[in-house]
Image (cartoon, rainbow, N blue to C red; front, side):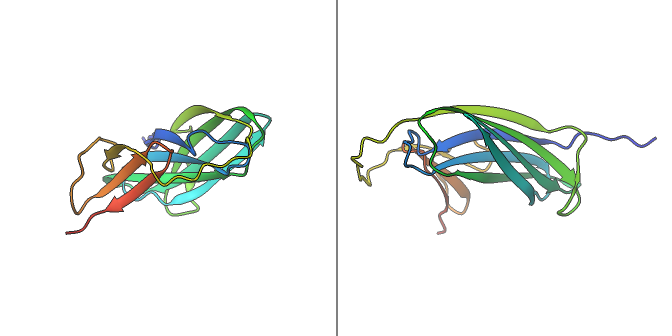
Length: 166
């Protein structure tokens, strides 16, 4: 008997940048994704804005070997009108190389809400941003180690991926 199982992908987090966007900002949504099988190349991603709802989907292709694959998908949204928005992401995974065969059911779904305010016409230019946390590929907070991929998350919503080599 041949069995079909759901592919195992999950949405670790959704991050909006800038953290407090105004109607002149380009808004980025960073979707941190985790897969439990080897390789995770992007097959496709898309989004559709319907009023204040943003429906997004992404699919990655995964292999058969058990291995952790951590990846971040970036959704670039042009400046939005002032208001409160819901970003609704559905993640699916498929087998094989791109284009891959889709799974039977989606792997995961997550929603984040954010507000866009009207710009007051005065832009504050600052380079001072505060580090909120440092995480490893699995999303665990760490103090920072050398020769490993780390994600630095700042209070302005930016996330930097760094490798410190020594």
